[in-house]
Image (tube, rainbow, N blue to C red; front, side, top):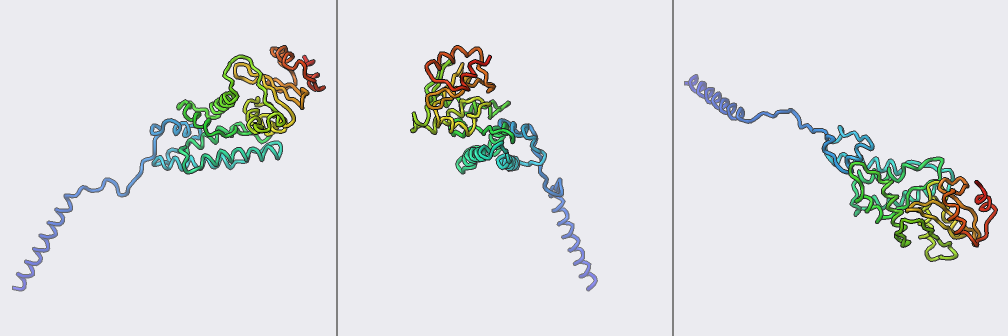
Length: 289
């Protein structure tokens, strides 16, 4: 009897084991031993995200999702901001940092809708022309102009710097009420002649000056503090700058900043400064062929 009982128990155990095996065999086995992630492909990027990927040769094979890409772009943005852009003088180095800080402050505000990819492209755009041996400054920050620039960008070939500077110039001209595309003189009054708007006029001088002029940088303020500044625009492009020291024409510069008056504007200049006193430097420029 004991042997029969033992055999029955053994048979029951085997039957239950078979039932369990059949039950688990019905489950679909995992295709992979571990969970794997698929790297992002270039076709998954568009608009400014794609521009950012191509501009900085982003390592997209390391990104599993957009958040990974945006985190990478944020590091690129901070890297560009923290770079030392140098400058020929201590003053220009300080002013570069001050202007960049204004950009950084706005771009890192909590309510700013700008993505990290856009921030990286913006910081690249405003710093790409800064050289250690030059006093050229980044473009002045203007919230309205930046928003318009981001709206205007050609999604497949974005040049934020070029579009922003163009919009910034149009903004300054619209403030002055200038819409004509013909040749026109603009007079930016000195601190003595318009102390209330001195800061605005300094900004306008920086924006409208040629890149080769020292008034494009921090020197705009001391120049305008001493006297008015006259600018000749032809079809929206600044061609001539005349610096005054009180009521005396101190110097005249063309686009090349080579102390030579462009022949095509010579007659216009002579008519414009008729009646003003001329410094020795201005006389020499007029007589230079």
